[in-house]
Amino acid sequence: AQSVTQPDIHITVSEGASLELRCNYSYGATPYLFWYVQSPGQGLQLLLKYFSGDTLVQGIKGFEAEFKRSQSSFNLRKPSVHWSDAAEYFCALTGANNLFFGTGTRLTVIP
Amino acid sequence: EADIYQTPRYLVIGTGKKITLECSQTMGHDKMYWYQQDPGMELHLIHYSYGVNSTEKGDLSSESTVSRIRTEHFPLTLESARPSHTSQYLCASSDLDSQRFGPGTRLTVT
Image 1: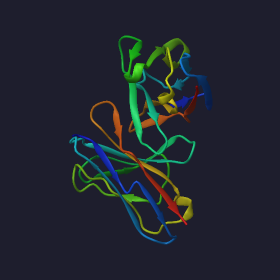
Image 2 (image 1 turned 60 degrees about the vertical axis):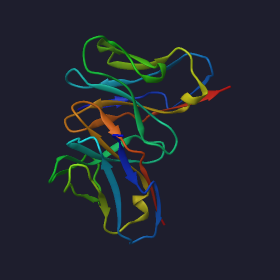
Image 3 (image 1 turned 30 degrees about the vertical axis):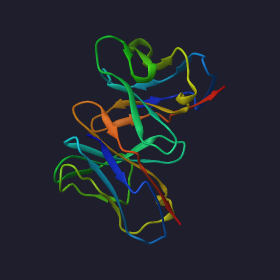
Image 4 (image 1 turned 90 degrees about the vertical axis):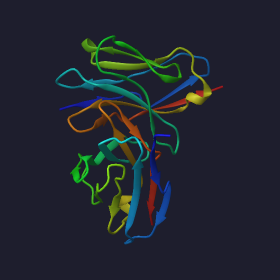
């Protein structure tokens, strides 16, 4: 069965610091993986996606993610966090009919 | 501009009322989805549709129903709202790969 695990419920970083959000998955084949961001009271916005090819994918807002098959991971990174990055981040995996989401990581950015 | 819309954004309603949450998309996508999201929790699929007159239940059991009479429209209905239905409901549509989400409807049943 497919599943997505985001081990960190809440992360706090200082503005300008680097960021890494962890995502581990379980899937029987090569997965399609996504990172979405959700601001309070809003829907989800796609940050980036991985289907195949280059394992380092670039997304919007300066985010990138690296697919590591050996570790079943798809961690999201940003070299320098901005206060506007404070939000909830969801990792997701494509299943047969829909997306399977992790429980999310809430990012707080302190000045 | 091609987008996906949900109305209302916020709804507070009493127990026993019938409600319909609207979802429309202007991208011509065949696939549409409804997710339920409780505060601080992940999204769970409750309904999906692969095209007109096609609807299926998702992974999370829900007392709501959906219809797909037009490609662009995928409304969700609760015949008799209960406090347990209080949640955020997110609609999405997709083309071949990624899903695009609407802004959501936050429903509170008192």
